[in-house]
Image (cartoon, rainbow, N blue to C red; front, side, top):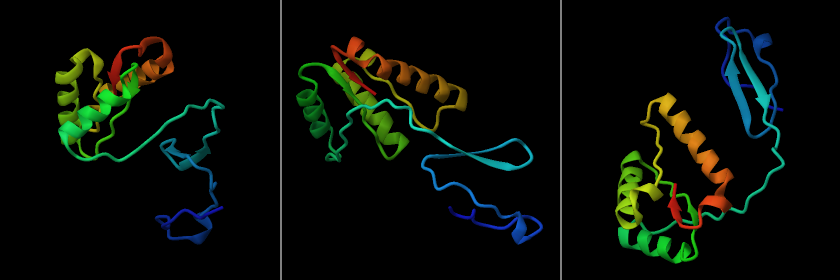
Length: 136
């Protein structure tokens, strides 16, 4: 167990309490106090492979073509919104815009929630709909 960092407004040590070492740990507020909840495993599993690739358009397209020769679904994670937008544009021009889904932190929260719901639905049905090439 670990103690939360920082002190309360009153600065009293008794306000500090132990919280879980769980990961992930959901932290939220009810408007009056900060609360924590352990997130239990779902029981589902999925094989996922991650790797770093050269920051080069040709390298990305060549890798995508090689990995998706028989169809499938690939997630491309970029470290900036600009790079994510560029990758989405590049892949959309290469394979068709209907094969690419873009989401990033600059979307308004309601739009991000909608995008993430769509991504979860697409991934949940991955075997059925990704016979052609798709990029997330």
